[in-house]
Length: 361
Image (cartoon, rainbow, N blue to C red; front, side, top):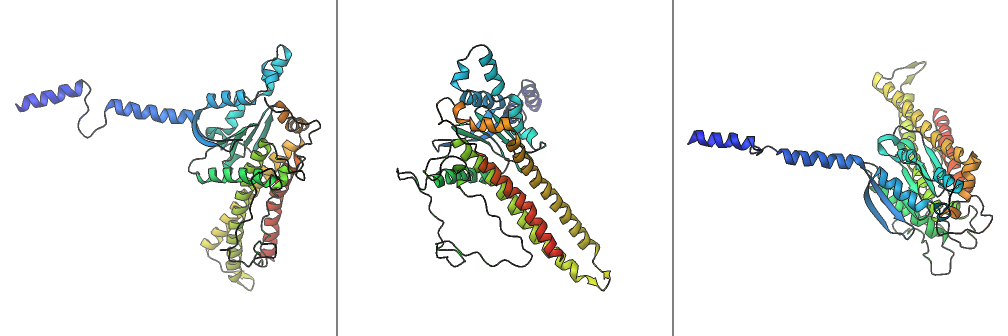
């Protein structure tokens, strides 16, 4: 009887039944297929101009084809001959999607690519990657950074609603933040009073005003809303500058504490600091240099877009390249937003340098 049981167990193993406690071949194969499917897809956070949002798993080809269909102007879709070839050259390309692909984007320099009907934003190792169309935003979700999705959505609504604050047509109005629980006393205008700055502390980062896109040639005085594509670009760049500033504040605080401790180890003309303390200062210096490189790379990417006449002309004609929109003639260039954000990125670097000089003094 025992031999029969052993024979049955052996025969069952031959016909594909897995021993108890071990995964079957089918389950293991399904798991591998699931992993491969996840590797072939990109997690995308889609926000539309109608404020609706969704998280989707999309393959590279699906993202490319869907973005092409939504961004290619109707006049180019229906064209024949040279115009059709021109439309094929101007639309989003496969290599543009690779710029936002998480498998490649972490090793690329920050770049802002302007195409006919789309803007591709890849800010390198900051994990801010997006494809912006006239009616939707495809934001590539970084691994383990789900909180960034709320920040993107909040910034987008903030820019759009801020530009409509003066509109009397029932548009949403942006309310000032409540100071009820603020630790600082309120100013006469309702905002909190910032605490006094300590000596050697760089000035706090002040982001570009919400109207930097809305006033960049789109008539903020008249309450006209900015185009969705420029508001989305502003929202992404706001996150980039905010992250860089937060990291600068952290490094600045650590550097000031390290220099203060190092100064206490100076006795006459001798430095009696230990090896661990000197190693910590050296690591902070390396982190500060790497942070400065990231700021410079962002500033260079914005300047490269602004200095390219073709890119700026494409930005100006962005709305006219969309299927359903017809902009008024002589639409001004929206350079105000990019220029102010680029200036803010430069100020981050300058502020850090001034803080280091004051700390050394």
